[in-house]
Length: 265
Figure (cartoon, rainbow, N blue to C red):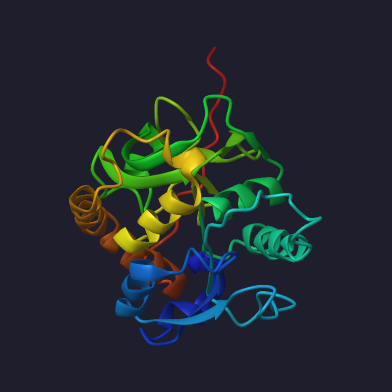
């Protein structure tokens, strides 16, 4: 659990003892630099690529969960029946306040697993390097507070989170799609965008999915543009990944519980 007041000895977990379950739904979206950043902070990564790799029965034994992106939809169970298991693991993590990070499809799976709604984006796909901006609540969040007001990200999706789960806090938005980042249960996070990509990965996506790539700005997938974008993403999101491991280790506190307010008389 992420509540350090409730876990006692977990606050003493050593830097090399933070074990993360990493679910990789699609072989075309590996951990990339995000894996390096998590490892730098002392995380031990157990990467599972279903259906090749069997998914664990539970999240017991893990201090955190990361779920990456993929080309399928969050409820595409007919073609990918193991997605039901992924949603179950994410629901368990969220319900038990285990630090969790869902990235793009991972965020959509997390949203669906906890009562949100995902569907095809009415404004069309988002593709290429772009920006998202922090919402007010993000300034008090242990992972988002130190991010700049406007953050560099990489978009490549056609589905979108239409409705956040009940009780979720909105952390970041964009003009096209407002639900870009959210938090549940003080330490469970979903980000609709990518922070784990490389130039080669994104150029491959653009070649393989031209119907999505055409929604990007002209030149968005040029090599120099992507190299610059990924340098900016690393500057912003590498410290974020380090803080996520610190959260999982119990060395930084989760978000504060909402304060109950008295009615105005």
